Image 1: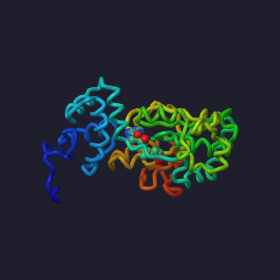
Image 2: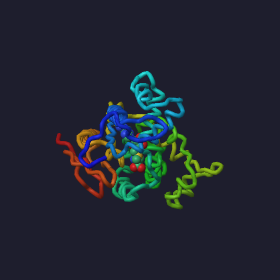
Image 3: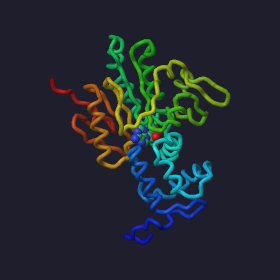
Image 4: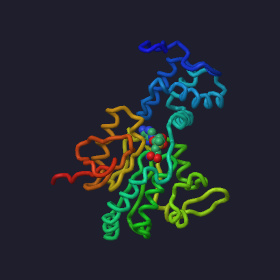
Length: 287
Ligand SMILES: C[S@@+](CC[C@H](N)C(=O)[O-])C[C@H]1O[C@@H](n2cnc3c(N)ncnc32)[C@H](O)[C@@H]1O
């Protein structure tokens, strides 16, 4: 495209097996934004084409506009899930941005251990947990400080908008390549060989529960959280959507609770004070 020129909606956006115009791209972007808050720019046209082409092929369709009409229909639950799964980026790994787990273990766990041992409820949330590497890394960090966490009122929630990735997370089974970033001592303690793969031990798995949840929709959880990890998720949202989300996290954190976000994200929200690298402490509420 010539700099400054606008793409015409009837022009072909990406040439290929299936007919895909800039108008189709705009429809996909609007639908995805409405469903998830994910903001797509036109630089993502090739990515959209290649990811959704697999769906068109599977359904035996010839053009994107027929596919989009189908996905717009709220009764097409299965294809709407497949659409979301195709367009979300699920890249993750165990102990990603390890300084957050060091902070959780060293700065937060001593206080949380005291509270859990006193019979208090302790709640952690991995919001946008993808295939589970993040909440399970949190669980191993918790167990290192509190080996009997499973017998106390300590729970970790992993949630994601993508139902297929949530199902995958709940299996707790990972490839050799996946488990590579887990430190040796933790691998020996919390992983068991399962054929060519590894499964997480029962004490890790039983601390974590998973649910499918759109962060932009209602949150059915009644209680506040001590710890929220929401990393590399808000980066896909536009500014106002990010601000709204961080405000809701601030409201949902216990006093002195912590929010951890991705390395390229920033939260400038009332009640949240920067405390460590991309980690924010919830200020105490008055009264
Ligand atoms: C790049 S992954 C990040 C995974 C993990 N937090 C990490 O940092 O490794 C982003 C995840 O956010 C999820 N996501 C995107 N929009 C969402 C929304 N509106 N509500 C909940 N999850 C969402 C995607 O499905 C994807 O699994």
